[in-house]
Length: 149
Ligand SMILES: [Zn+2]
Ligand SMILES: [Zn+2]
Ligand SMILES: [Zn+2]
Image (tube, rainbow, N blue to C red; front, side):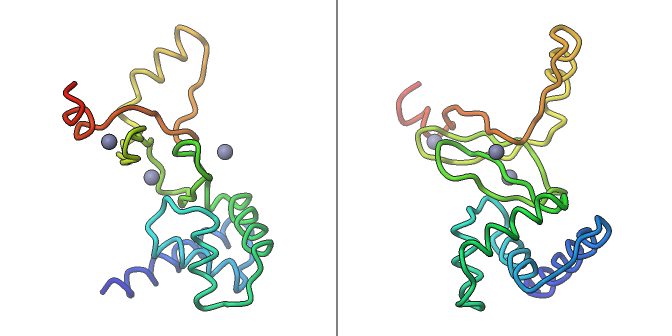
């Protein structure tokens, strides 16, 4: 079941890529499949490791070049969950991330939770907030409980 669902998702992404004027190649398809399998939040290194299981000779430069191309084509996007390497997401599956700075736990929050804040910042400060690119840092409930807060 999982494999069939993954294949359908890969095909959906391939459709998007073509609609945006991009061409598919072996590296791009392998990267898209690896990201579907991983479910998001993976680094270029993680994707390269996954892709090399089936394409052992693919260079890191090829991985980076094609990740960049997929980003330019609006299929992928990268974001920062903290001080570590940036991670990848499909562009049609975005949300804001809350990251625990103690244990690294990630909570995904839908954009609508930020609607009021976004409107206020726009109205009061003339500032148009970009969600997604950086995570919001804090302490998760489990870590707060542990430290007796
Ligand atoms: Zn960035
Ligand atoms: Zn935590
Ligand atoms: Zn996410």
